[in-house]
Image (cartoon, rainbow, N blue to C red; front, top):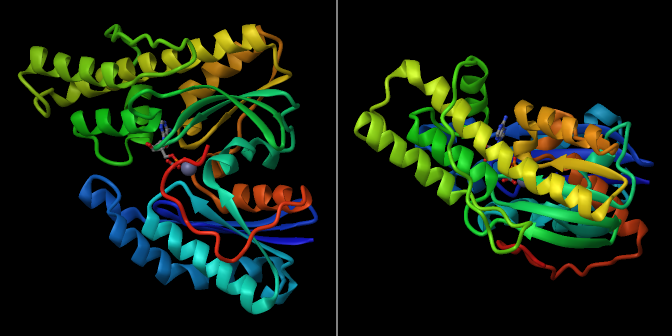
Length: 333
Ligand code: KG4
Ligand code: ZN
């Protein structure tokens, strides 16, 4: 069985092909021009997806030696994400499936991330605890099976990636903030500022706006405002923020490992690319004697491999969808 996956929820256009459960191609085209604007400009993102999607599909198929007609299932991200961006990939997928008489499967982007560990050689075992950390979402989940997910906690304000992006901006580092914060934090190994992490009513919820404000207050108090810190202090500030943000994520995850005793722990989403977080959670999993699965970097950020994989699972599970299935910007619960 051949599955074509299409992902266009934000600023990555991606196309993947899975054949009989094996990933044959996963091409990702990142829209780097958004850095000039300090964040993703939705209208520009949709236009760029439109320009690249057809050549990218052709390139992915060329890589596998297949033709469009050889695809059995066409899976595309339906949401959550930027509505204009989503509409490009979803409608492209729908159009292809309709004209070729193939099965069309809309995929939830977050579900794509949740199961992205299965793209690895070493896969999670059910039930597994899953920490989803992306630019738009922060979720702690107990994944019982392919179709049974229990939500333990979520963010009450900013997503983890959003916090990295906002603090990066405050430090004058630019967008996307995660990799830039990491890079700066890595070159520093002196004393750190102990930024506080907010507590939440639900013990598994996350809050990052307090931490963001603590960084802002520190910049105001010590340097007289945002953008005033000398360059030599940026690595120390980045490392201090990263440590606090990662501590918040690891603490809640460790608490849930103790309470729910899952078989594995999986870390997924764009922020899962963070080396410091990967290392800290690997240590935590080891302490609790759990298998730790974190996707390779190409499967952490947005990619179509995870969309094709999820599409394949939905198809195998007997789920079917009509062509009037629409894109949705928010999270479907
Ligand atoms: O999953 P993703 O690619 O897109 C969404 O679905 O949101 O996640 C993007 C987020 C951005 O906020 C970006 O700053 C963050 O992932 N990110 C990182 C790193 N690489 C990307 N955050 C921390 N450390 C990184 N190395
Ligand atoms: Zn994502």
